[in-house]
Image (cartoon, rainbow, N blue to C red; front, top):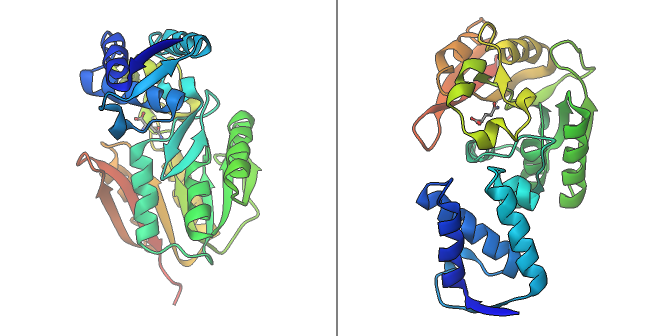
Length: 286
Ligand code: GLN
C-alpha cells in the first residue's frame, strides 16, 4: 500500500504522458485515469486529497500506462467514454465518439426531435447517435451498420443504457431497406479522404477502424451521394437529413441536395469554427 495525494499523482501521470501528449491533453488524461481508479472527479483532484494505492491498483496503473504510452486512445484503454452524458462502451470494433458528433446530436435535439420521430442512423458504430436520440427524446430509431462487430458493440451499448433500437446489418451503398415515412436520416459516415491519413495522429490511424474513417480520394462523397438518393425515398415529406461532414466538404455535400425536392439546405460549423454539419429538408409534395 502506498499513500500519496491526488495532486501529486496527477502531476506524475501528466509528466509520464508528456512524452506523447501536449501538456493540456496529458492533464486531461491523467484526470480521467485518476477518476477511473479512485472515483474522484477532476475538479477535486487538484486538492491534496489523500489516496491509498493498493498493490493491485499499482498493477492496473502500470497496465494502463503501458497501453497509453503505445499511443492507444484512453477510450479504448479504459473501455468506455462519455457521450452526451451517457457512458458508452468503446473498443476497437468502432470509432470513438467525438465531441463534434455530440454537437450534431445536440443540434438535432434543440431543433425538436420528438418521441414520435422515426429516425434512421446510418453507420451507427458504437450506436452513440441513435442511442442518445432514443434516450433523450424517446424517438423510434433504426440503426444500420455494415460491420457485424460494430453492430454487436452498439447492441451492447443499447442494452446497458436501456435504449430500444432496431438494429440492421446492411451495406447501405448496395442495400435497399424496406423502410419509409422516416422523419429523420442522420449519419456520421466515413469521410476523411485517404491522403489526409498522412497528417493524422498515430492514435487514430493505428487503433481506430479505418473502414469507419476513410474514403477514397477519387470518390470522397460516396456515402453522402448515396444518402441523398436514399433520403428522397425513405423520408416522409418534410423529413430532414442531418450529416456530419469533413470540414472541407461543406459546399460539395450541400450541392448534393440542390435538386428541386430539397429545401433549407445549410452548413453548420462546429465549436472549432469548422464546417461540420449539413442539414437538408425534403420538400412536402404539395
Ligand atoms: N471526426 C473524425 C476524425 O476526424 C472522423 C469521423 C468520420 O470519418 N466520420 O477523426
